[in-house]
Length: 269
Image 1: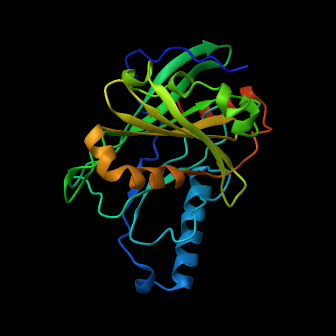
Image 2: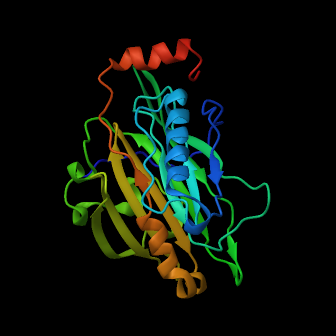
């Protein structure tokens, strides 16, 4: 059966606990400008940084990750019920934002139980432009704990899921929209993703990619107006397919020890 998640029509709560900032890795390097051993050293440095930050697994970067595209990173969330993992996607070449603009993080309270509050975390990316103007309406990454999942496929066949409601995407225009395509893919690490194309009655298109790992659901949602979709739809599909979350097992540490132990260390209040 499809999981039910509470409505997200609440006011976002402060997001002070996520001390690791959302980073934007705008490496404008081409393959001819770097050597393969440089890539290896950089990957090792990133893995070491994540390990120091409490990530349970190294950052997975698909082949060619230091080409001309800009890597976008949703940092691991420490002190939660799920394993802290990094979510990554790639912007098409030429997509830029104003200097100094960064993704805006936040969270919604889903419910409170014996172990305390359970949140859905999100980050909204700033407006992006290319040579012809604004190229996308919205980009959002979301994560929420959902214990017991080894893969997104454990939720059932993709045709039985309702992407408009299941992941808490902050767009009212998709609630009555039609799903025009639903496909699954598997990356080089064996991670399975469910992906949808949603067409709204207002003429906008929303692409959704979702994966489960480490006891949480990770979602990338990309929205575009009709004009943006007409000239950049294929680039947006490529961005969706670049979405990557490393596969990881759910923590074997007792839930109360994970939460209360981290709280004592200042993980979150």
